[in-house]
Length: 374
DNA sequence: AACTCGGGGGT
DNA sequence: ACCCCAGAGTT
Image 1: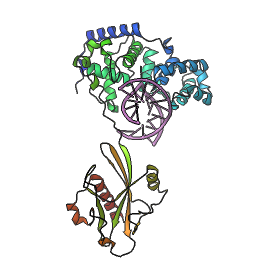
Image 2: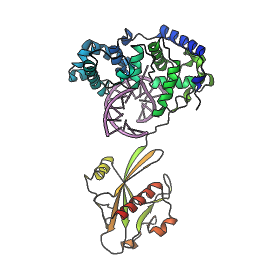
Image 3: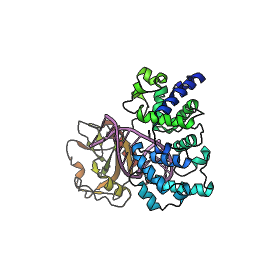
Image 4: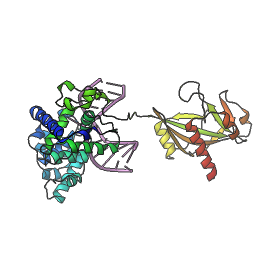
């Protein structure tokens, strides 16, 4: 993949920074945590802003600063009172980590907020993003602060095709940012990116006609804004839970059923699959509940505990299958009985004539392993 | 790398 | 009614 930012020379970087920063200084929002750049205030605001919108944070920030004006007050905070202040913001571990980190600062840094990226990042609850934000805004260091906004803005600016949902792409954005960030106004530069990302370079309908850096933006030139950032559709597969029955007759044949002729895995053959609820499934899995058999196959006795578990991912589904083995209760030639036209007793020689989907193959393998172990 | 944590806004 | 997050810790 091509790295378009590497094509920028010093003059280009310089004019870009000028255009961008002058836009920011002219248009930046008056936010309570921007009154000064004291690390304590920047820290609290950045933690509050994680996964939370500016408008929501403002009131919380005022209340927090009133109750805990400095690091020492926070370190000595009563946890219940702290959580009360945080109430409604969500992600409550953020609040607990704030108190822990404040204690860290009191004990390990003599109550002075540490000023190097490495030291900052040792504080509980402060990850790469927040480290960069504090280092640049409070201490003027040219450190990137890469969040979803920055990834969106820079991926459009340079048509960066790296998948932002992959952890490994982070270093690409880090390199890019280190190249273009202003060393003189690092904190303002990072905040300019945040403002741009939230007010202009928005996810679904960016306001490119108002954008101060449209002249530099490859996506604007090529009208590819909505192709960026590249993100693998983490379409969540809906989980489905099944019990599979491996029923064997006197001849050693297994009972197989053919799926209906439409839909998923049409006409393919599997063990009988009984859909169960998630909680029921987990009870079987953790052996907190014994399997008591199946109404449809009441002439069989099943193992009370599963032989094992098989999972299979489709584009939109994830199957969880627990396999139980079944034997005939009485030898009265049930094996001759055909339950319906879409079922069959089959031995390995017959398998060649039947089409099995992948989950069924996995079930056969599980069964085979079990046979070898006993 | 996947999962969890919580609430709000956008569509 | 979903979808998408101004992330970080845990496993």
